[in-house]
Amino acid sequence: MPLSGPEDGSQHGSQPTGGGAGPTAGEDDRRIEAHLLAAMRGFFSGGRPGDGAGIRLGLAVSGGGDSMAMLHLMAGLAGAAGWRLSVASVDHRLRPESAEEAAFVARICARLGLGHDLLVWRDRPATGNLMQEASRARHRLLSDWARGRDLAAVCLGHTATDQAETFLMGLSRRSGLEGLAGMAPSRMECGMRFIRPLLGVERAALRDYLLRRGLGWRDDPSNENPRYLRARARKALATLAPLGITVAQLNGTIGNLADVRSMARAATAEALARVAREEAGGLWLDPTGLAGLFPEIRRRLLVGALQWFSGARHPPRAEALARLELALLEGRAATLSGVRFAIRDGRILALREPRAQQGAVAPDALWDHRWRLESADADADAAADSRGAEIRALGAGGLACLPDWRETGLPRGLLEVSPALWRGDALLAAPLALPENARKDAPWRARIVPDLASFIISH
Image: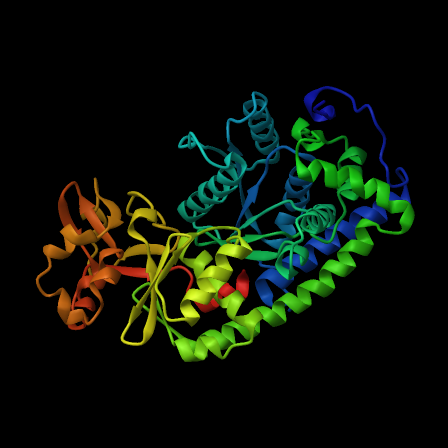
C-alpha cells in the first residue's frame, strides 16, 4: 500500500530501520548529505571544491521513496550549494494511481517553493515491449523538458540497492561486463545529461531519512509484483544477506567491474579513431583495420555504433551481432538494428536505414535519436521562420530539389537519411546537402549529439 507521511496529514505505520533517532540518526543524515555533495562535486567540478554552484538542475521525482528522499535532500542543500532546482514527474498512465502520485509530488514541491511540471506519455505504441518503450519515453520527455528549461542535467534517484538488484538481474540473463558493471553515475540520453548522485546510498538509509522527518512517499505496487524480474531480484537480496552477499558487498564488485568497463570503453574509443571516420552522420569503416581488432573490442565498436545510430538502450542479440560481424569481415553488406552496412570502394559505410528512422518532430527537438538542427547566430529570423515546420528525413524527394547536392561529395544514400526542415511539402533547409562553401552562410546547421567516440565512452 502507498505510504503517506504526516505532511499529508496521516501517520506512518513503521519505524526507521537504521537504529532510531538521536545522535546516530543525525550522523547518518550528515553522512548522506556529505555523499550527495561529494557526488555533485565529482559531476560538475572534477572533484575540486565547488559542487556546481549556480547550475540549473532538474530532479526527476516519481513520488517513490528514493526520488522523494532526493527531492528533500537536494532542496535542503540547494541554498548553501547555490543550485537552482526544477522538478518534473513523468506519468506513463500505465497505472490508475500514477496521476495521484504526480499530484502528491506537486503538493510537496509547492511547500518547498519549487516549480513542478507534469510530463505525460501520450504517444504510447499499441504493440511492442511496453516497459522498454516506457523507459525510452521517460528519458525523451525529461530530456525535452530539461532542454526547454536550459538545465545542465537531470538528477535520478537510483540507489546502491538498485545497483545490487541490477547486478542480480544481469546474472539471471547471463550478461557480460556491460550488464554486470551497474548503472553509470553519469550518462547522456537523448542529448541530455542524466546523473545519479545517490548511487552510493542504500534504499533503507533513504527511507530512514524520510521517516525520521515525518516525510512521506508513495510506493509503486509493481515493485513487489513477482511477475517483474526486479521484484524477484529484490526478494533475492534478502535471501542472500545471511551468506554475506549484501548490497554493500555487491556494490564493491560492481565498482571493480565498472573500472574494467571504463578501460574497455577507452580502448574501444581508441580503436575507433584508428579504423573509422564519421561523416555527415554516417560511419566509414576500414575492413582491414576492423578485422585486425581484438574480437571483444571489435564487438564493442559494432555494438556502440548500432546503439548510436538507432537509439536502442540494449545491444542486439548475440546471434544477430555475430552474423553481422561475419558478414562485414567477409565483405558482404548487412542490416541490423535499423542500420545499413554497405560496401563502397573497398570500405564499409554504415548509415541509417530509412524505414527505421523517426517520424517528424518539432524544430527544437532531437530527431532520430542523434540530430539537432540549430539556427545560425547570423540569422536571427531563422527560428521565427521555422514556425509550423518540422524535422524529418531529406529523402529522395528532398534531394531532387537540390541540384547541387553532388558538390558535397557525399553519397546519395547518406544525404537521403540526413535531417531536413520541412513545412508541409516545402523544403526549408537541408544543411548537410549544401556544398561546403555554402554551409557557413546557411541559416540552419545540423549537429550530431553526441559524436560516436563520446557515446562509446559514456555508454
